[in-house]
Length: 232
Ligand code: SF4
Ligand code: F3S
Ligand code: FES
Image (cartoon, rainbow, N blue to C red; front, side, top):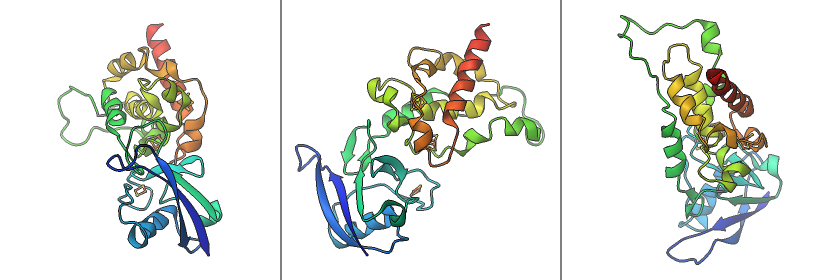
């Protein structure tokens, strides 16, 4: 079958502004959008630029706006989209070229919540043990692959780019509720500031966008409740 693929192209060395270009691509219905992009790059325009690595929904590098929704190009197939497919870079992030967006701000926010185990106790002889119940407490947020689909779909982030965003809160949640970690207070203080959790207006775009099915709004609510509980 043939698909009409519209791609929002932008090359800062050549274009004054982003513009749509249309490609006719012969595909199999089971092909993924990533396969289409690879095909266009190989057969029609070698300058087309996009990130990808694992091609199996693990690395998080190929999130983009596909038919109006943030998704991973390697996880969405032609038969799920139909014969007209549009592809644009993630909204709300500066475009470097074509689908490639500048992720520095996104990863800066990720780093700001200290996304690593904080524990100054002497190292045990073997691993720091944890019960299954304690592990289950933050299981959902361990699934995050830092694809930025959530943060870049959030109207609160579009309106205020300083908002730390759902992805960073998810990453903070993963450590705040880890029974082996001792850095919860530091993280909660960071997330209690004017660009932290209170910027969330429970719009739920982030949940719709997350390719890992993480209950992001629940994680945000749990972090907000922990901040309130700490104050009380
Ligand atoms: Fe991507 Fe989901 Fe992680 Fe957000 S929470 S960065 S959408 S995997
Ligand atoms: Fe944004 Fe998700 Fe909250 S879309 S406003 S972070 S519920
Ligand atoms: Fe790794 Fe799609 S290429 S998630």
